[in-house]
Every structure is written in structure tokens, then in C-alpha cells.
Image (tube, rainbow, N blue to C red; front, side):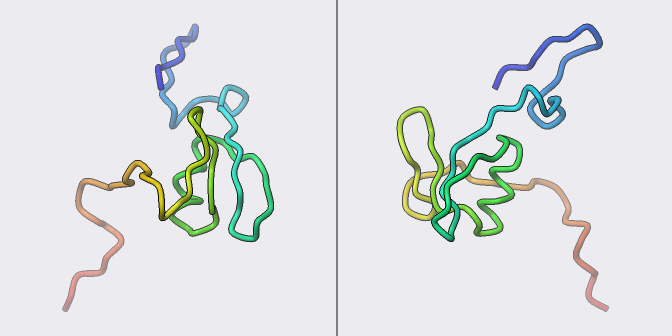
Amino acid sequence: MPSLRTRTGTWGVSNLPEEFMKEIKVIFTDDSVGFVKEAQLNALITAGKIKSFLRSDGWVRVGIDPVREIRFQGRDRRKVPDE
């Protein structure tokens, strides 16, 4: 997603003000339909709460259709070292 230029600087998706964030239509795992902010989608997919979401080219079925891989690069600081 392109950055949004403002008077005070440039925002990327992660720190875009909420009023500018795109909402994505989703089907939750309980089959209810709703909208989530673009920035929330990855976390909800990872948590197993999203069954499908709507892209510009159609519905994506989580776990069936290709979805961008969510990766973290760097040292995982949450793990406690073995003693």
C-alpha cells in the first residue's frame, strides 16, 4: 500500500490514522459477516477467527486459498532461554 503524505510526514499502513484505514469484509469462523480494519486482518487470521475475506478479485478461503505468509524476522524475545 502506498504511503499517505501529510503535513507532518509520511505514514505507512502500521501507523495510519484509523479514519484512513481500509475496512475489509470478512466471514468469521462462526459464519457471521462483518468488516475489520486492514491492520487487524493478519492478527485475526493468525488467531483463527477469520474463515474468509474479500479481496478485489474475490473471496479468499483461509487455509485453502493462497494468503500472504505472515513472518517475523529477528530474535524472538518472548521465549525464555533454557536453563
